[in-house]
Length: 213
Image (tube, rainbow, N blue to C red; front, side, top):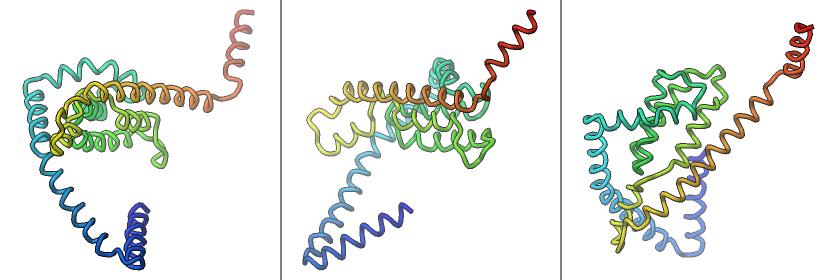
């Protein structure tokens, strides 16, 4: 569906440009955009390669394992319905670690693998589980210590101070992450209340009282 929408927008743009006599401007903009995209991509390679190399060194040195161990209780709190030693937990930790350092491109495959593992625990394959919704919310609003990709883009466009966004990015992503967690907890509690059989609490009380009598 998305492909159809994009194709429709492109065709409408070309038709409108042809009717209004601006087809040359559209063609020039298309080539300029392609050139800019290639330039930005090459500019990102150096920074991404550097941080991916640092992540590999951290993994080989055991630093990532220690970070994962520290984050373990937090992840188990956020994903209480996922077994402790399930493979999904490892992918979730890798996804969150990559997002912490602003490595969205590295976090994406880990997030996909985590979703695939969570789908194996899903009793209803057509409906997302609470754990899958939690992962999606955290991946979208992940707290970022070092916005690597944004810094690389600012460096590529000759920013005078490409790292000045670190503080504001950390604050903004921290607020977004907290909002995502609060919303996730609220919807989880709402789902539990909604799926709770009616009269369970009352029946329990009555049985208890009867037993005491």
